Image 1 (cartoon, rainbow, N blue to C red):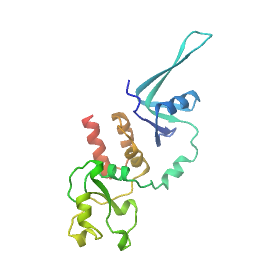
Image 2 (image 1 turned 180 degrees about the horizontal axis):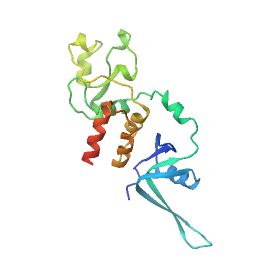
Image 3 (image 1 turned 120 degrees about the vertical axis):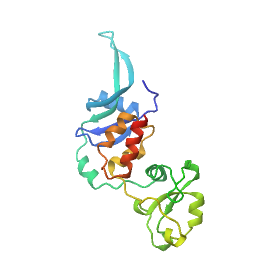
Image 4 (image 1 turned 90 degrees about the horizontal axis):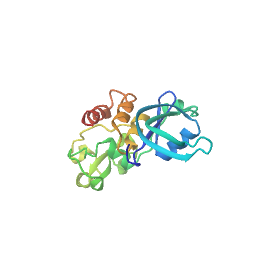
Length: 201
């Protein structure tokens, strides 16, 4: 069994990834009878009280991926979904690399850079932001990469719903990554990164 901080991937009954939940919420869904089926490996075994009639203790085994009933119209919402932009998910999208110098940095040394600066009419959106180390961001200042003589190493993109679910995950397990990979477009820059993580796991 795993430590209690591992997250469970919740999907709808068609297999569409919905969100990450903790083990307490997962147990609640099992108790309510909303779990339609499970995938992945069992990661928790939660013991409850003892039945006065049978003398047996209740046990709920929680898998790493659970599909739940009662999520109407989710697929329609997912198709027109634009994920909220945050530094945490932006840095995860760009693999914690500065997209100007190409070096890997801890979160404390990273920043959000607007490719077209806000002062020049740029927007604070996924397609106009990249991860930059503080040094490169300070050097670029209020200029475009071309104006600053800096090369952008990758084109920024808007994550799909499944990609965003992956980016929000903490300590994503190999079976969860494999499942999410099937929902991520083959053309996505994240596709190769996920495959690499599965190989290394």
